[in-house]
Length: 216
Image (cartoon, rainbow, N blue to C red; front, side, top):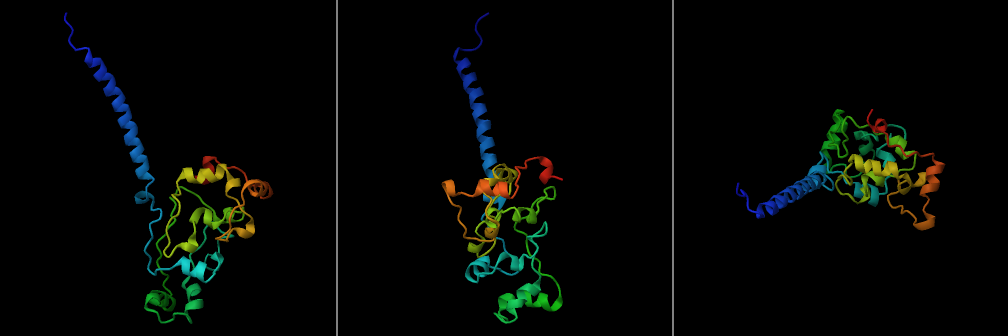
């Protein structure tokens, strides 16, 4: 019986197979980059709030410590959203008639809490405890970024599991002295002056990567 396919069909078949493999790899890469893009993760996307609260103004310009508003961050799993009374401690005298603060004054007078939109909102199947991390020398900047440079709050990191695991696997690269946890401007010394490994030992930090640590 005569040959059905021309010899060039072998080359076309090989090209088709390799082309299909590269196409699948390309599509997977594009999909992976899409899932990591700001469009999906919300990284560096300012979140509109009922009141346009500026961390840059309050933290950098006025020097207000994180713990003044987030009072539970050192002792609770959640950092805590400040009650309106905390805002009015200052704004009963400063900018007390500013139109932009009308929702704050209404909340204070009526007792109805302001509705803030969460910026860092982990899924329900993920457990995260602020106090554990703070008391082990993990700075606010490590997760929340340079909050003191944000006129409106946004996510500085994806909060993907791979991002969390990077810190859990290499805690010495992220830990800092406890008295620098709330310091937005602390810079890590380089080379032999890096205190990471010594602090990991001093604070008894373990490289916890078991699924049950975060998924309970």
